[in-house]
Image (cartoon, rainbow, N blue to C red):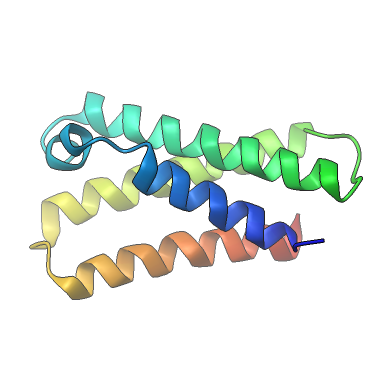
Length: 114
C-alpha cells in the first residue's frame, strides 16, 4: 500500500499541473481571482487524493475537521506563495524549484503530523 505522501504528491501534481490551464498559469500573477481559482482547485484536488489515500489505509474517519483545517492552511500557504512569487520573483528556474520545494515540503509536513 503506498504511503499517504504518495497520495498527497499525486494530488499536488494533478492540481498544480494537470488541472491548471494555460490561462491560469499565465494570468494568476495578474489576477487575484484567477490565482484564487487555481489555488482552490489545487486544494480541493489535494484534499480528495488525501481522503482517498486515508480510506485505502482504513484511517477513520475519512475526512475530519482537522483535515479541513489543514487544507485551509495548505490553501493560504499556496495562495501567498504564488502571489509573492508573481510579485517578487522573475520566473527563473531557481524560483520555480524553490516554489515546488515549498509545496512538497508543506505536503511532507502534513504527512508527518496528520
